[in-house]
Length: 150
Image 1 (tube, rainbow, N blue to C red):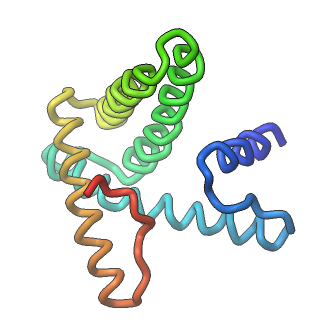
Image 2 (image 1 turned 90 degrees about the horizontal axis):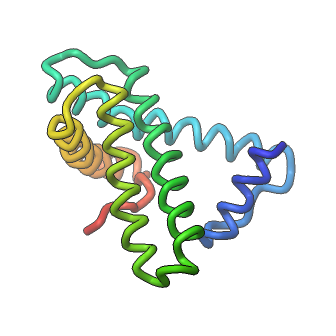
């Protein structure tokens, strides 16, 4: 129950659409998140295979994807919350930088690789995700949520 409360708070903080209120909408929302998690893990898996010379498993990619998202938001909002009162707006910039480093650390640990290879996995995964998005739009008219920096 505390996890659902935390997700609801995250929705309110980020301006995302309202949290599901009925059981059926909650189940649809959960299934949608699981499907999105699997789809987003596919490019990470292929990037891990390519960068780590074939030494990657889909479970590692799913763990890196989920762990990366969780640690990114914990670090970003933690730094902004705890240092925001002391530093002001620069705390958000520091939080963003530390969150990206923490995200890379999760990828590094998940794939048991170096920092440079972890960065390579992230870059290749974004490129594969972009191609996958174009293919999904062309085939079925469905797009991955837009979170690309461009």
